[in-house]
Image 1 (cartoon, rainbow, N blue to C red):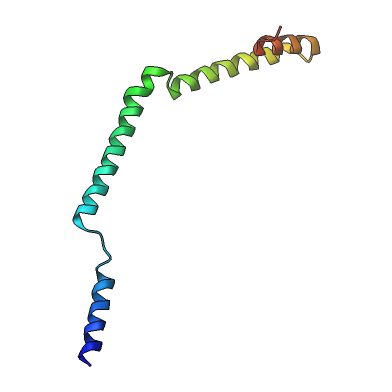
Image 2: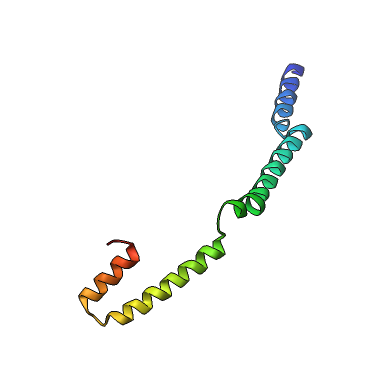
Length: 93
């Protein structure tokens, strides 16, 4: 009988001991911290160095849309004028 009680106690200890150790939690926190710092550096330092920001791209897109809207109104349904203006926008000669 004592063997059965010892086996049950051993099984319960194994079930309860499946948590994370302090060392594992510390390593996980460190890895996440390094990733977060890296993402912040990329977003605030590296991205502005090599290209325009999202706001600049959006402003350029809105400007182009307004120009295209004005050109479309100027077409007045004339197919040749619309084709010419479309080719100008696309850069096709």
